[in-house]
View 1: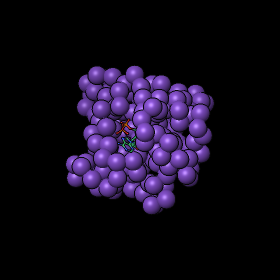
View 2 (view 1 turned 90 degrees about the horizontal axis):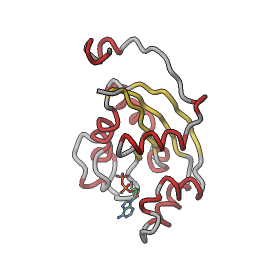
View 3 (view 1 turned 90 degrees about the vertical axis):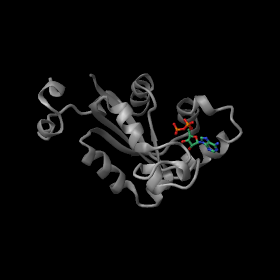
View 4 (view 1 turned 180 degrees about the vertical axis):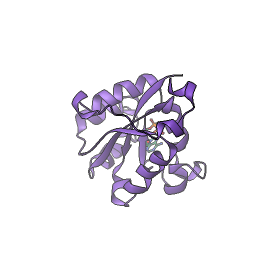
Length: 156
Ligand code: ADP
């Protein structure tokens, strides 16, 4: 069991639709710890890196324009094996096919305007957190709720 950090971006549609508070609230209520948060505008260079795995797809220019259309909220969340836990809360890419109860299932209809990005693997999470946050923007602190979120073995 490992304490992990993962990257979450609230995409331009989430910011424009006023879903920031709702999304942050879901991660907080889950018992995850926010260790970094900032609003930023993404440029083509960071998007080409971040979306390298879809850069040669025909839909990439549309995705890139969408991601640049307004600021995004970048967040780093921490928790036990949280990369997978956050993906479960995210739901599948196509909003209208995502399970009810997930963020995309509850708030998205589109395959591209799907409200949030979340890291898909532990390896990618490490790279993505480093891509969006300088080390002095990530905060280590004690959060007393850990005692109630995790059992003794999980906290060790
Ligand atoms: P996910 O965000 O679920 O990890 P991907 O990494 O496959 O999904 O794709 C990155 C992003 O590219 C998606 O979140 C979505 O915004 C966009 N995208 C993926 N597939 C399509 C598609 N077929 N048409 C348009 N946009 C897409």
